[in-house]
Amino acid sequence: MPAPLLRAIDIHKSYDQTEVLKGIDLEVYQGQVVALIGSSGSGKTTFLRCVNLLEEYQQGEIDLDGQPIGYRMANGRRQRLSERAVSAQRARIGFVFQSFNLFPHMTAEQNVMLGLTKVRGMASGEARERARSWLDRVGLSQRRDHYPYQLSGGQQQRVAIARAVAMEPRLVLFDEVTSALDPELVAEVLGVMQDLAKSGMTMIVVSHEMLFVRDVADRVVFMDGGRIVQEGPPAQVFKNPESERLRAFLGRFHGLFGA
Amino acid sequence: MFSFERGTFLGEVWIARFSLMNAMATTVELSFYIIVSGTLLGALLGVVLVYAAWPFRLLVRVYVDVMRGIPVLVLIFFWFFGLAFFKIHVSAFWSGVMAIGAFCAAHMAETVRGAIQSIPQGQTEAAKAIGMTFVPRLWYVILPQAARRVVPPWVNTAVEMVKATTLLSIIGVVELLLATQQAVARNYMIIEFYLAAAFCFFVINFTLSQIGAYLERRFAYMRY
Figure 1 (cartoon, chains in turn red, purple):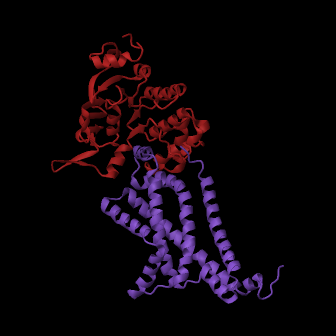
Figure 2 (cartoon, rainbow over the protein chains, first blue to last red):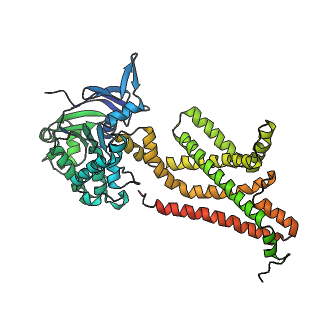
């Protein structure tokens, strides 16, 4: 097997005295879709934010394409990289937020273009073309001149996905992206994600949509209390939960998994 | 009714017309310099208050609190007589601009700080997530949103500054109030002339609040 695209080694993170990540090890290979599941407070979102360097962590290492990101060792001491270096690394990792976080003063198209012109240094014509093609791909070619407040939650989230993937990141992180949506809007967002997964995008998905996880994920990782409790292909994890915690967690999804 | 005879209101206004018009121009100029410099410096200080390292924040915090805690008139005396004491020659006009401008900047700094801090953290994170560094993040994502929130309190402060220019009459800047006083000293038409001056200030300030209302409409699409 080739080297993993992303490797997290023994990630520890605490807020003051409370340790929320207690040693996370995870490898994600090119083209894989990895789903993080678990109840709230299990550390899924925190871990995802550590990967995109939105949170600092006290111990451990994250490698992207074999290169450590976020920190470096200098004279035996662990040091946060400069703002510039961290930003350059973030540009290679897409992030889609639960609450969309579109820029309200920009149209859908401008939202997607901003990173292309200001980070990638693309000419605006080329950036516009790429933004349009991504908005097209997520089914919003008719909405590209709309401001976020003129769009439904599902449409906003699809713009946010286009904004993340237009940067051509090495992998995209999805943080409970359907949790803030009305139930009838969930499907359109999951559809876009499924389409991305099929096209070979590497993705880490924190989700409570178990059907989506079962159908789309290559690997499921169950987290509890800041640790990874079990991981494996969906069929295996869902059919043979090894711990009481996972059985209880899956049991909440109304016998979806025959348990 | 519309008599321009000497001793009638209109007649006296006519006699004082150049003095009053110059004074009106002075008031507008003073206000313009004060509001523009106060806004620019205030925006800068507001950004420092939110983002800078603590020694800078502390420095600006002290500046803002001192400026806001001192009567404007004292500030005006401080600049006017203080600079003279150090043998720095600055006209009454410009020491007035500096005094009220410094006061204005302190108020604007607080306004800008509040506006920036009221923008959801998710905006910064979204900008970070696409790899934007601090300055472009501020320029393209945070400040345009902050600008919209600044508009209503900005109008408030600007209007206060226009009114504060009347205090400069005390150090001899012939702005609208002092020119009015001078005219009144000649003709004793106290009520009429002060009402007229009040009306002129109202016109200036009404214009400002209309500009504010226009900007608010202009930015109305920025909703969450």
